[in-house]
Amino acid sequence: MTRLFTAVALAALALVPTAAAAQAGANPYTDAVMAQLAQVKTPIIRTAEKVPEDLYAFKPTPEVRSLGQLIGHIADANFNICGAGGGEKPPATGGIEKTTTGKAALQKALAESFAFCEKVLAGMDDKKGAESIKFITGPTPRLMVLAFNNSHDYEHYGNLVTYMRLKGIVPPSSEPTK
Image (cartoon, rainbow, N blue to C red; front, side):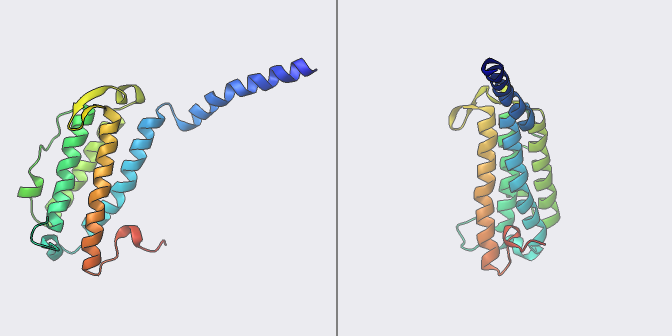
């Protein structure tokens, strides 16, 4: 009886990693980077919607980017960093921050940049994501380039939060839950 119990217990333990992998998905690292992108995308998109157009030119000090330039910078970076991580030529190759003005045009560029990053991640898996590529930080796995993009987005969302707070606007991430 003890042998039977041991055999059943060992068989059950052998299935645990398989069941955990099935629950997590076939590409847990890619899925995690994709989930982080979705998490940061929402408040940035909501910020671009929420802030009135006249505040897109707002700069807390003359030396820093305006709120609109920050949104353009995020769009530029999404295109360029996700393009590098995915090995794809982005549909826009920079210049949004310096050339695009107006709330509607910046919102459109921002939405397109996030859609591009989502497309890159949809074509990624953990195996491809582990491939090392040349990046600004040196040889870097593709998924870490895409994770870097998420960090960059969070960094600049923090800037946007400060700008909104200075103008008495509650940032999307601080709004009460409904």
